[in-house]
Length: 275
Length: 318
Image (tube, rainbow over all chains, first blue to last red):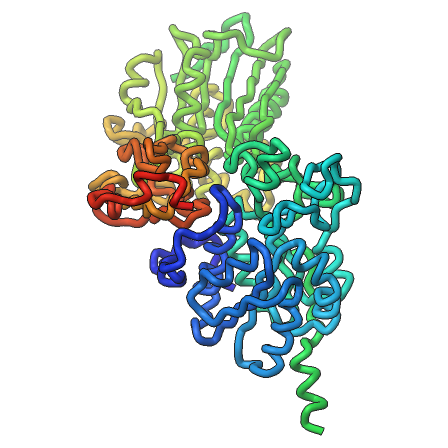
């Protein structure tokens, strides 16, 4: 762990980016851009060398984040980044493998891969950018869409309850489970560093905003307003029901939510691979 | 200087300070002492914000008969201020003809005095010097009680130093004061408090008062960082206009309101003087277009001199 909330002038975000691909393709005000900064800042703070790092990302707005980072990146099939990352980690245990995925990618299409990666406690860091919608494919309902929200596949309002991915990951056995919002960038960076440092599977949910496909269509305000509302009222009830933080203005439970020191998958596979 | 206790009306002592200094302890000692001297005593206090370093005050009234627990404005015989600005705040309560003003000159600067967020800025703390105040009151002393207590080995005994100073104005025997004080302080600190009490008395009786023309002393740790130049001279704010998508997040989120969108819908530093270099816009720029760094002030908009294709058609930047 590095010191909290320090200002490191030596960190230059642009040295980590593939600048030829900029400006990025994300919509104006999209929270994923802030998550991108937090990620590369966390790599810098965790002291991970660029050639020791591999990023695996799936399909979706979140999946494109990986392509903007100047390191080893894999852009794989929809919902399967955890499966590819598992194989990569087993083949190259020396690499720090980070998975960037979205709420639809991770929870719906890749839901099975998520629970089994948690169960195996494989030594990966999974960063799930939760914007509550399938943004890139045209605004379909996702497992984390709040009830009554308009999407292209729920024109009369969403009738399904939203998913709390952190509780799912904890129940499935993830070593470290955390949640932070893009509004609190230094806290998000520190949480990502903690996830990168943790042996075993770390699952980090990043509360992000889809301003164009979700916010504008649901009248949730301008990008800055949506970001400021991350502290509470815009979020589904599942996020507000488990909270006991009297000194935080938000009702969203953030920070490290669960941690266990169960041995990781690599530690156990080394026991049988020698036989 | 002694309060005239021959009056038929009660003697009013107003003790003020900030949370954690021991205002309540001092008023308890005084109230108990007056009770034991055979007076009727009424004491009331407001200490709601005490734990946050907020304003605390306590009224103590004693005499043959006391009816109301609060001191009317302009009738405090003694104003005992444990913090400099609090003393000035309560100055109108002092009896203008005879009131005695006893104050610690030590400044405790509250967080809300740092309204100017620029690095090295002076806090908005009152600049009135002790000699200016003592010219306006009938009588009184301004001492650096915290320094006196620190010289005795415990800065927290400053309230007892002030009790010693207060004792010279009320005229009760010193032994009676010490007997009450030793019942109210932790047993380990009785000796320190006895020394502090005597130190407070000695300072007043011997006239060993500090030079009042100097501005009130601030604790070294809380002193603002001395900088020769304002922070704007060291902050560089830059934007990559071709990366900016005009989402307005930085303009909304800037605490100093110094950013704006130009006609191309690109963020610009409209008020460079107001920028404190807090970096919030850099952190929360979804397009990673803003860079804030220390250095000579140059609002350099990279590429602004050369014609931008994006400038002609803002839509093409997406």
